[in-house]
Image (cartoon, rainbow, N blue to C red; front, side, top):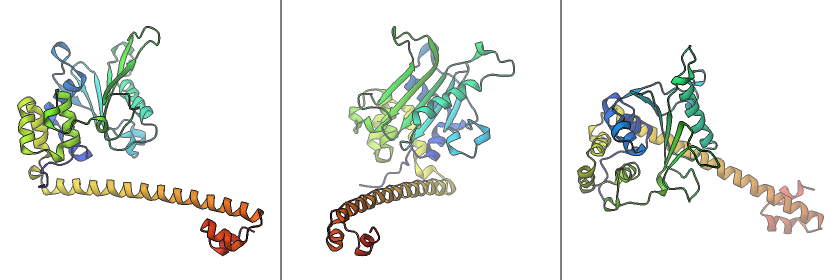
Length: 286
């Protein structure tokens, strides 16, 4: 199979190129309308990009910087994040960022009545929620008895790509499916696949065009490749830490077994053979 000409949209550089630039604002508007199911009167017509630093006091912390933050002409805020790996407390961070985007609307007058709704949208390359939750799920605040939606200013949408299993263009049933196919399989998309997608969703064809590596300049391509190398390095470091922790646990188990065998009067040589410890390591336990 020939190497794909399309880059990975999940990479933060390519993601921001498509969804976080003034040049491609129209792509982001279509994506938001499609994912949120907006049409007619509530359709987003225009957006304004805002600072992605959620807390200037800790701006050096990469966890305080979101991928895309914008508002529409009404004032609704949209926080869009690409989540590559499961991190502890992600759900809490999602709520924190939504709350920050909400509170930052207040000016010095402190007029709460003018606060507008916040939408937090996470596109995740890992499972975030239990298996029974669909690959696109929407969450808001509901009354536990009536299920009434009275507190309307927060909405969370989680897109879990591993749960999306439609790997062929012919299986795609909706515009949302086509967006998810784009995120998950862009690098594997053939020209024929793209032709079929473009027939149904021309805006996604524009997103693919932004992923065409032959349209990227050398400087941006080098930055993209370096980012991939950084991510692989981070994965390698994490894997090594997990291996080290596992080995440490095994060593502690061996030592505990050896201590019990010593108490039982088993010879040092047999304990060493049984546990995998050296004779000197067993002697040190005496």
